[in-house]
Length: 444
Image 1 (tube, one colour):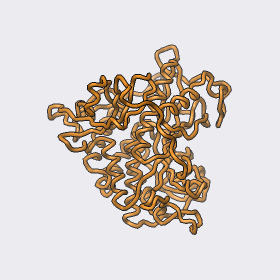
Image 2 (cartoon, rainbow, N blue to C red; image 1 turned 90 degrees about the vertical axis):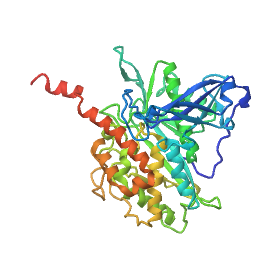
Image 3 (cartoon, rainbow, N blue to C red; image 1 turned 120 degrees about the vertical axis):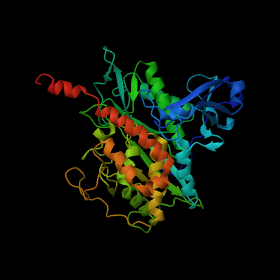
Image 4 (cartoon, rainbow, N blue to C red; image 1 turned 30 degrees about the vertical axis):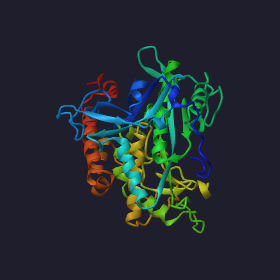
């Protein structure tokens, strides 16, 4: 995430009235960008309708009667509203505009919709006089068809960490993603190959919190669609390979006060951090276990969240320490920020950001005292015994048991989440895995 003193890249493109159709999108609970194509004459109404019960869906299209999804109340419609002033150019073609919509039910923001949840978290900080700024770092693997209906790692024999060019990107896919992102107004911060192959880090510029999450959702969709054009799969799954590192979604955040200054800065402090920043860290750590159920929302996520994995396993923080969940960059000055490293690439960016902002706000409201910074190596030794749950099932119990966080985040949102994700966990627990068949079947 870049210095917060730099201006954002202006959105390029042509006036919205020149488009022939609109692709409106909205994030569902799973982080999937759902929506429709509308001819322009219809799009100009600024709204459309979809079934609210899509919020009952799992990845496999099974549905559970989660609170707020109204699966057992007739599957009614919700209304998706957007502003034509927010239409931006699409990467698909010159005749298509794209916009992100908000979900409403009976003229009220839908409580379980990710944009509503994030807006509530932003507004709670705004009520205290602060504007949340967010920058998100992504990691992803590129996969190619294995010839048997599945996927395998993309062949990049010359790849190495922090690589650029054709050695790590044989067909120029990452270059195409970067060029396209800039063209359609998704401001890139940096791109490079990651530690494992064929893994890449894809970072966007900071912005106001809602805009940052909108841009990340659009960017992920764009990048996956460009990869698909080449017959490849760009996956943000947290741990697609058991023998390689996981893919994270790091939420970098800071607060701007009413005078437009970075409120996390105190130049007199040893670490350059203000009391607000320390209390924010303390809040994130106080609700560490509960955050996992939202920031690590899949069964697979807990294969990444392990000791010595540079993820967000331990409830600790440190200055320029990548083994900590909350890392304080050593850039200092206008770039002062907190980096929350727990979320993986499968996390819903709206929900993960809302969760981090909410926990941090609770630390400020309660004036929590931050524990000592991590100074041990984080691999063999840590300064805390607290860590995230070993699996999604336990993480959901941790979330449900943190009543203070649930109320602050939104009890309706938590109640919905628990039902959907417990159904996912129960399906996994009842499933016989390939590992079990290979490990036991020959002998039993």
